[in-house]
Figure 1 (cartoon, rainbow over the protein chains, first blue to last red):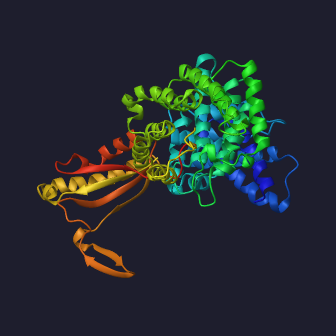
Figure 2: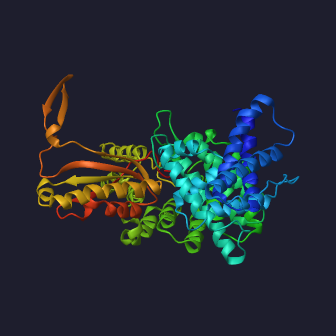
Length: 415
Length: 122
């Protein structure tokens, strides 16, 4: 299928599905019908040309598929009477954008597990096939198919209503943003498999977040998440060497960063923070912007980054935020100040098993010139990490400290 | 996250069970397989032959040498595994507890994460 046709189909997928579910209920059957219609378009359009009204074409075909499915089910259940009420209507002239938003809320239903929310969002909102999603997460297609089927049955019961209002809406939106963040992160840091990046997932996360931002332009956290993704993704070309090994931020060739994407992300976060109530994604995006616009690690505004992490720590406390703050403080005020912030974390159960505490400690000890202790910390971290490239990186840092020659540079280890 | 749920066998513990108890454990795997397949968490499972059927291959100076028997002699041995993809370590531990072997005195199910490719930005 040509990219242009595929892009067009995936743009329409959530709108068609939203309309069908709003009209007929039965999320599970509507979702199957839309996937069938997308498949039909994927074969017919490249051959016969794209119809004048692609949206109307998809609604009509999907409605017919749905009617067929209802008939088949009714025949099985001998409930023909039910079918008469379900004749497909014509497509309205313009798709209702709120349907897409409602769909996003539905796919990120809090009763679903995170992997199910992710899978359902990619299929129903992203228009990806089960096979594509399975490939992206390196699981068998049957596993992913079952996960999606189970999720669809689960949300079927919840009904397709307008997104909740008030405090509940904010809470549901938080879940949606977290799901989009998970999709992006999976693409960016690849939690399984041997490729460091899964660009199709980062691109998809950015596309859907852009969509959410266009539907909710006034929401500061949606804009903040989009900016965070853009600013993070812009550094991708510099994150790995040709052999697949990781390059620490301090050692990255900043000429490889995508300047246009950085400009978009930085512009977006600056404009957003000037008008919207502050939130965790905005703060993370602001930190990413400071990194992305600095000419080098040395010339980075570490004091400002440390301050932003302190605000983030108050707004959304987590040991990982404290770790990152410690690194920024170490750069701004010296390694001892950073190490002091790490001390209380040793007893934190959420971090006890995590390698990041040791890798950060190693970095700060190295900065402080305590090479023996730094080497031990790097080695502990290397044993704990589940990422082979990161393990190689940490073992490399430990090995560099093991040589007799003094280590003078203090590159690496920045979030 | 992917985890390997490793079933360790202790023949002495196994032989101490009645035939009915052994059958109940083996049948219990069907229910476990159905449950994790239904939830979309199952990737694969295999039971392994007795270590008496193993062979170990070592290549020294480019010359392969084959010795019959397991790599390490021991009372316990790896009897089979499930490879699962689930939400968290907590969920993996929960799944391990659903495997019937976990409830047998002298046996246990080991949960080990599968390594992945990257980490957070360094």
